[in-house]
Amino acid sequence: MPRLIVRLLLLLAVILSVQPAWAQQDPPPRPVTDDEVNAIANKLYCPVCENITLDVCPTTACMDWRMEIRLMLEQGMSEQQIIDDFVRRFGDRVVGTPQDPTLRALSLYTPWILSGLGLLVALGLVIRWRMKRLDPAESLPPQTSSRYRDQLEQDLAG
Image 1 (cartoon, rainbow, N blue to C red):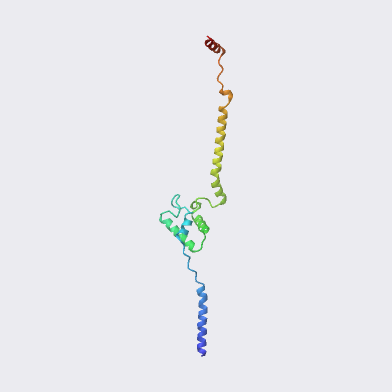
Image 2: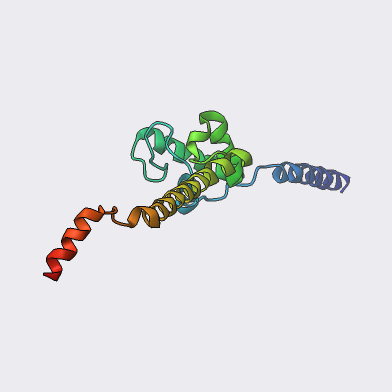
């Protein structure tokens, strides 16, 4: 009987020592869909090709980068962390717009400001041109000499 109790206690000790080992196993990676990968790849431009986003680029390099995005998502990285990693490795050209808020505002608003200033200058030139055309001193016909006027009145009278 004491042997049976010793064996049961040993079995219980083994079971209790194995349970924490099971709890330490990494959870299986969550499945990442193609839509999740393409949602991030759509925001990144191919560092090799010109003006083509990663989600539609057919090159082998882009396929590898999409797989890399999938692995990063499986590791639990957020969208912004993945984008930051690509910007760190390849520069701002992979996102299309700068990540720095000051540079982003400058690149987005400068064309609008310059277009507005150009329109104001053009409007000012048109107004000045029209005012110059309507100047009454220049619109009158030149004065004819009195000799020609007298001759014209004579011809009309008689």
